Image 1 (cartoon, helix red, strand yellow):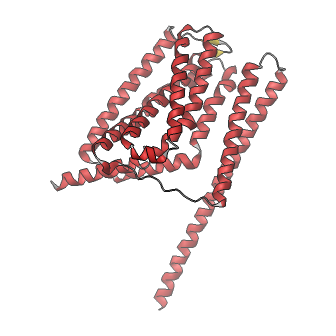
Image 2 (image 1 turned 180 degrees about the vertical axis):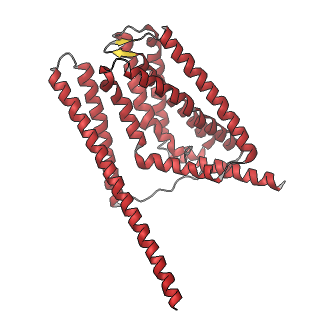
Image 3 (image 1 turned 45 degrees about the vertical axis):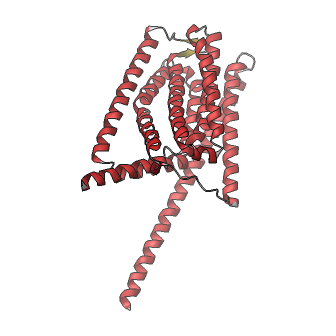
Length: 339
């Protein structure tokens, strides 16, 4: 009986940590950060493929993606109404699961598009043998991964989630927020198509690897977030507390402005690459296109080096701070011994 209570306490602690970290309703903003741009990009790519590459299979998908993109935008807008979101947690937790499923589909389709891509205005046919094999393989792996994750969840519920796994929820969120992983992924996803066009099948292999990775990795959060949504509908002990409004300091305001400028630059630069490499490809001289793409790539390298240098500097400061703290402890111990 006591063992069962310990296991139950461990499980409650894990899902409470999950609710306040990776599956927090504050993450609904992902719909605007990642979902909306990816949806818009895919709608445009599918439209181009159906018109210029004459891929009939993509015509219906244009409307599907247009609808899902609008839906993503509405989810993102709803995240601004904090009181409503936290008052109806059952509904918005289920909506968050839907968001993750749609985002998975968006990224999967983006990678699938790169699998079919050969060169400008040319694609492998999705109804061809190669396209069918990739779809079948990824669906089988995805469903198998879902099954494995359901089994693992059932097993962990029986023995109780470990404290290490519970703490990893918070580490995962802090890692994503601090290291700008979302931004890097977004840039890679948007820039890979123009960069890899010179490699004959390099981009196709990149797409295949990404699809296999998505099919293996994404089922884990889908299963856990769905189970959390179920738990929230059963008991309010899993409900999150609405975040308190923080008064931003001048340093935080400056940091926010820098982020807005950086995001604006990334969006504009990526848009420039697509305009230069796609829309105005036959109008502008090849030297101008090469120079624009090269300058943007150099600017990204500078940004990455600057970010790495800042991280190394922060790490050095942290180590120095810890050493000073350790010295103070040793000095305090020495003074106590003298007394």
